[in-house]
Length: 390
Image (cartoon, rainbow, N blue to C red; front, top):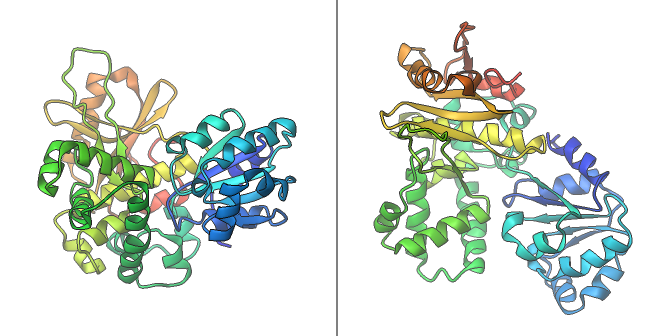
């Protein structure tokens, strides 16, 4: 098994809670990781129709057969099961008894979150981080990494990214979302998802997004919520202080896997990625998603922010450090210029007490150890080193 950075955290939580719930997008490696870390536990996949029918029709009998504990894969397929699981773990709260996985966010699985509140640790496993990918193959140039994405199956089996991502979108994204809600107009839904890719790294305007997709604001909101539920996209909220300053309050839109965003934009080769007008936004998506993966792999919340004021000064990423932030600017260019530091300087002037450290992550290969805002090559993220994070 390819080593995953979440493994130590998962084992630690299993030594503390009777239930550990592991969520994440399909094909992110949840099943592989759980079976590798807990090889003696019975494994039950609730995607299997027979197992699912038994769990739904006779939940007590189903759990009696695995009373000693088990890995229950895709728990959202039997949504009533956690209510019965609650009684078992209350009677015997042995740590690490049950490992649950789900391809929906824990907060969206209401029965799971309500029944197992206080009884289950919740962790998230996203596709490979740069550090995990670098353990398999030497990191290529940024356009190649962006075009291939980070789905483990693509790299583990040496699949053609464009073909594998097409299969992934049709087999998992469209199917899961059709099962979660009544998506009757697949053509408009497909257009909606591709329009989301075209807004990667941009401020979210749901009204414009819905208008461009030809759907109502309510439908656009519902579809976006579903994309978040299934770990396809995430929203980066703005940070604003209780001050009189005019600051942007709309979130920014990103994809958990930048390769899927690139594929939805019609990018099929690294050369196309490098020439695409949205390359800078895709590079930003790559970095923001990787920092989020680092947070989740440590068992930390994904409390990341960005900053933008009414004058257009922006810091792409604010990583909390107590009551302060590590301020990170992201630039796809390989040549450093003074404009890279404009947003950082504006933020530090406006909120000097909010900055612990910061710097620039850029598309070049050679960093610069500046005294104020150090410049770090993007490949340094493979060593989990963000500017000022240590």
